[in-house]
Image (cartoon, rainbow, N blue to C red; front, side, top):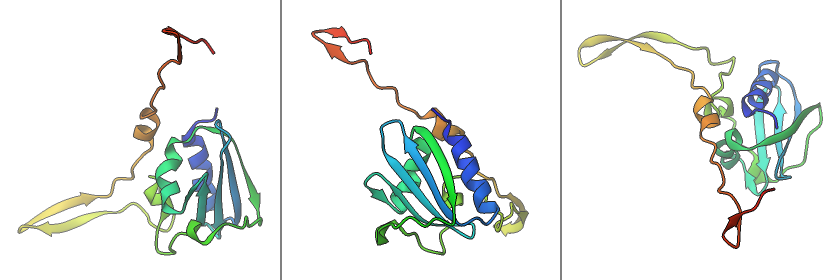
Length: 145
């Protein structure tokens, strides 16, 4: 099993390099995830029965078995899988995109000048929220797999 943070870092690096193609992910439970990239922008996402924005919420929690990237290969996906051009999917995943640098500045709040810093979220919480399944039981005894 591959850590989700490694997979998402690879996806972010492909976006920063302005690559075009399809990012393939295979999970432990034999589901496929397809992410279409076009010049560094994530255009469409598909994972199992989920499409588009729903995949963004599920992506940090999937158990990755393998992943690969095929340059200049465009996987045909349904129209529900495409996300709006104005959305920054990497920011929704907690990753930083090159066209939005981290900013800090001063602003006025209730008559006082306040220093503001933009914090880039991380995936540490997503990796720690993995739920362990209870042991399988047969006739009152746990089954060893």
